[in-house]
Length: 359
Image (tube, rainbow, N blue to C red; front, side, top):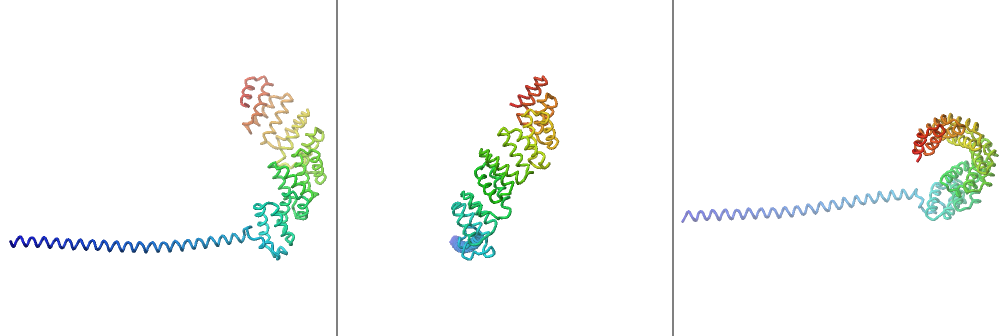
């Protein structure tokens, strides 16, 4: 009996101890969970404060940057740049006036820009670039007379207008170019470049008489203007005045500087005119000169080959054509005329091959 009771007591004691340990373990787990939750809440609160502080700083920096841009941006109020205090260039930020005018031009149109820029000019702002902007706006609005008055006296404005007109001609904005050069010839009536550009604008629009007059005026102011001689020569060729065309192209070739980027154009066009008029020996000399001056120009060799072929020198013509093809292998015209030269040499197979390459 004693042994069994002792055993039972031991088992009950161990059971009570196990329950106590288990309760302690559960209590520790609960406490640990509470501590974990408290720490997590604290960390989240801390993170929120950090994020808010960061956002506040970012917003502050952004606002500062926005304010800095606003100080230089043309969106600033008109009163800030065109107020009653605008009397001289020293008392106003002219750059801000110009920026404001350009911004309004894009946002509200050219008439609004004219009002903005004119207000500044009327109150004494004589900044050359501001006047150029105003003049351009007036030109855009077809107020050419006003543009002339605005731009008159601005230093080197004729060069600026010539550059603008050239860009308009290159982009085939011929009517805009005409307006630009009409103003340029009034602002700078002694500028050969202005009259030449006016001639090109008229010529591009199909007004040959007006173009002729403008080119002649250009040569009055600059008799050695090789570009004006070239343009006039090409116009006279279209008007069937071959003698006058040849005369001006010859002068263009003679007056063009060796390194001028348009030099090859002048001499090649002269060779073409001479060849078309049956002046084959003159055309041959011109083409040979073109090859010597511009050995990397494919059309110089082409013109030389064409003239030699017409003179019956098919072998020499082929050599010239080969050089042209070497410089531009994809040019079908070069292969085709090579075929014609082979036919003159009775080399039918080579001719057929050249014609096939031209296809």
